[in-house]
Image (tube, rainbow, N blue to C red):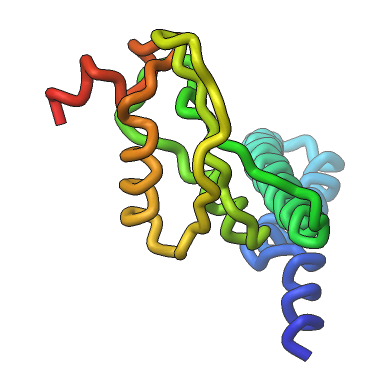
Length: 173
């Protein structure tokens, strides 16, 4: 019963999207009626309605894209969870520019898929690389991230200026 309820939530449209969709339909009905009118007040209202329809459609389309991405992510994690051969490898450098925080996606994927994170590494300074420890996330993101970062803090990335655990940044923390 709980699974059916969750499946219904995943398959159905969120309330906010449903409300926007209904508003668009109502505005389109009003638009159709106003297109038959020729007086200035009706034409002014028609112009406002058309702008409102366009704004609501844009918002609806953005929400639809976001929902589609979320559903896809849920389905992909489900597939990963079912695939016993799935492994999650993390390398220390995962961004094209410097950021002082780590993105959380890798962690949440591993948690949802109930898979360990293999802390793999490439040390460009020592010209070495390897697969480190198999790390099982506990659900305590902050504590787990500290352990993961401790593993990587002595590794040198290809672009150290983009890696927030590089020696140049460790003194600032």
